[in-house]
Length: 192
Image (cartoon, rainbow, N blue to C red; front, side):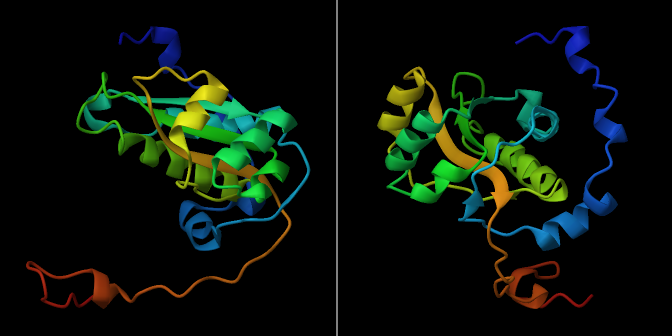
């Protein structure tokens, strides 16, 4: 894939955005929750474009960018996708559903991992803008492909609803750093 010079330029407004309360990335990480209840409101195009641009800027192995996304805003199509996602009906009220795909022809080894980095960029940007998200992996891939006319060679990685939260879940319990990280070798507790 060859990039055009114009593809490398950033929209002027992208880095000038006033995100919710000037939230920094660590604050967005701390505030992120899996939202499973949305107000039936659209995500304005300007915000949606900012969220999508965050994915475009994500890193990938060898800069291959093996991802493609379908953005679904049509209510009937969202309903059908919710059914294809094991009847997770809360997806219907999200302002948009973003379907992430990986292309193994572009990156045989990383096509299923790199799109997750792009999705996480979208998740954090959506959080910083005041929206909720919830990574959805339980899907009938064949049905999703059929509904969105996705080519057979593409792999559907996940769905990402983005919308105005209608719930404020508490933070879930997380493991301590010393349970997750080791110094120099496995099992040697890190001391920070």
